[in-house]
Length: 149
Image (cartoon, rainbow, N blue to C red; front, side, top):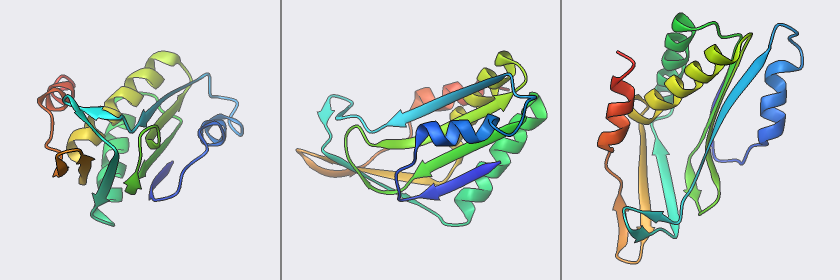
């Protein structure tokens, strides 16, 4: 299991390959790559700064991954979330799940992402033409996490 909160960019292909190359039991890898968009709620976004609570954030991510492992057959997981200044098209987050079967990989990947958005202590500030503003949590993210029960 890899959990990393970092400022550096990551290599998507290398991170996904690391999940299956040494394990012949892996039959599926599902992944989600989140990117910085240049618009949010109708406003242009020229940059985003992500902040976190070191130590607490990694523990929260580990708990989310362990919850997923308790629900599905998960062989390995990679969660990378970037912090610091980011710009449109920069990768922000990678969640990748290796399993024997695609159903478990897809479900666990979606579950981890839904809970990462709502339970991990990250804060986003966007630079817009109107100035910088903190981004509030979205109701749609809470609804997505709530469906898991």
